[in-house]
Amino acid sequence: MNRASKLAAGAGVLAAVTAVAVGVTTRKRSKAEDPYADEQLGELRPDRTSTVVADDGVDLSVEEVDPADGGKPVLTAVYVHGFAMSRRGWHFQRRDIANLTDPRVRQVLYDQRSHGRSGRATSKSSTIEQLAADLDEVLRAVVPTGPIVLIGHSMGGMTIMALAEREPELFADRVRGVAFIGTSAGEVGRSGLPRPLLSKYNPLTRVLGQVAEWQPGAVELVRSAGGGLTRRAARTFGFGPGDISPRLVEFLVDMLDVTPVRVLADFVPTLGSHNRYAALAGLKHCRVLVLSGDHDWMTPFAHAERINAALPDSRLVRVAGAGHVVMLERPDVVTEHLVTLLRECAGRKKWWNRG
Image 1: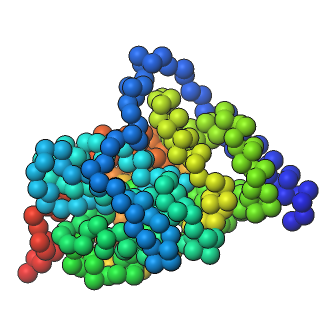
Image 2: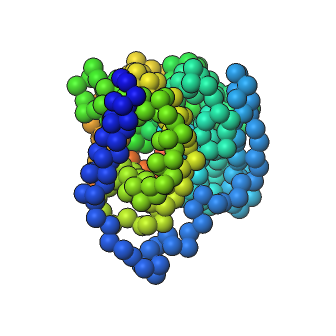
Image 3: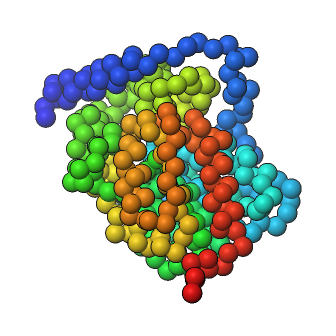
């Protein structure tokens, strides 16, 4: 693709996103009508922060949250965020589960490499396999003992699958439960499933990588200059068609804005080639929740159904009308199902030993 073609392709991507975004109408709401107008989204204070150094030297920013009442936790929940987001995206779950007393749960949240407050990785190390190695390092550093529940959204769910492939004994020994939220287990180009936006077979995604490689500075300039476009795109691709809090859209935009386009392009190849249906067999010892919105453009609900079919004992939850960032859009529903999972996992040393 020559320079002129790349420029035209980039314009085509922006035009396509704009066309889709224009199809979503958002009613203006006053501050009094917005339930999250005064919510301090992503601003909760942790009990401890630390830096875990990955095996290739990249710094991973980690925070820990203890039970709010000071009681002793019986297990640790580890949150693994998705593509282009950060640990801040778990705001509601982190807030509410900190107040849980049945069971008390310690929470660990971290930013994946090149995201949030973690260090920037190279293009070569921007892979699902390396993300699994990073998660392994985080667990060894801050959760060295005790039962664990892993909670992954989008790319975070893929990271957990890759960890199960890498460290199956960990899932047989310490991981009591796993929650897959808005994610996929396989290479959609060969599975017959609907192609998510991030598939390497999606022409919009391929062009994103090409344009970012050609002129990342220009793409960043366009993005920063077009705040309305960014907000519309976030509204369209992040949420379902219902009435959405403007504060939630702004919060998502805030997270997306700190992730450079070059980083997004670095991860496109690994997201497109991800195929870990075989790795799901390593979760046979765990309680598994598979939850997704049925208006998820990034990872369509059919992918959740496919994961559930590969794990016959898992619990499948379809959140009607919700989009990709379902944990922000429908926080009460997501938290309710996570609390059920945590309760199922608490105090059970090896529930799978049924005799």
